[in-house]
Length: 387
Image (cartoon, rainbow, N blue to C red; front, side, top):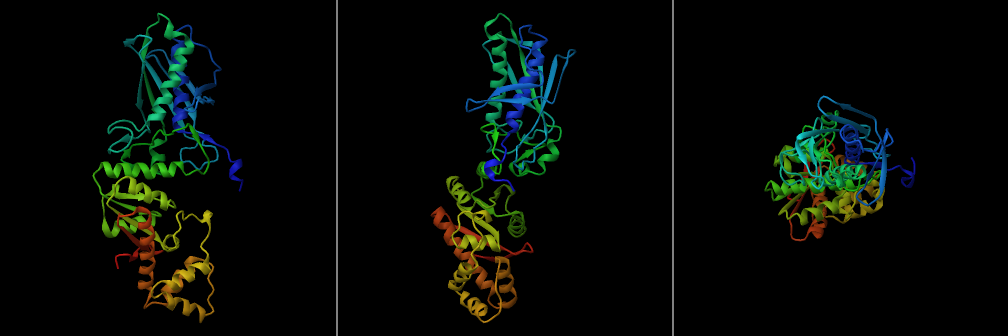
């Protein structure tokens, strides 16, 4: 594996949409404004929110004279980040409307969503219900890129009356790609979201995951829910759904971002928090680990056994280990040993771990009650801090 410092950055779908929009607008204006610069043909440069400038290669482009419509596409390059939209074509189609001629000082641009761009159906997101899922920063980047072109053309100081420009962003493969995301949970249907706050995708960063956690909680609160379910993975989430069947919006995939998710739940004002995880993650939480990803350290088996021995009923585990030839290399092996050798105490010991995890979580969120649920490797709820 390459060191993270050497991983290549990429561009957001929002940045690609802005580049495609500027390229398509260039083609359109060339046919209605003689002063439009010829440009570099296959490349276009746009401004980014931090003031930097970046150049994009245009994959495909064209102009239809009969309906005064131009289009251009950019292939999304996510760098070395494992982004589901990497390699997707982001297309901007720009059409002029002579029925709505505007003065040079009026922003001549409407942004719409086309094929493969999702539609927002639930409140709580930065885009209104019924609108295409094109977030505020990408919208601003599109407008700034197009207005920069108009300025380069000299049209803002001329007598030329700029036609209204209708820009439609589409992603032909967007509906299929959206099935690999959590858009359905956020109430975004029919395609992907056009996202990005900086224009840059940093490889293996936490930004997209934590942004999804925030958005999920925004939607849950906007839907009027007062409790949230934080799960370490899909198996844990399904197990809780099967037993408790809370509204879909209540479920938030926290992954390894335990402390972050708990603090966000507190900030959002939830009155109750459910926390679901399988054994290794729950044991880490019980041992007061704020970030449970293995890259922050695997479970120290000796410390884990000592921790378990200190839990009520855990001393039996410690004695069994001392009296046996068992040596453990993983948390899973400890779990299997408890299940097979301590059948009379396993449920009480598992509940003790859940209770310790609850106590740690409540130290983070204060007065908000937390209920922890341990999920087996078979996908069943087997213990809880309620027991």
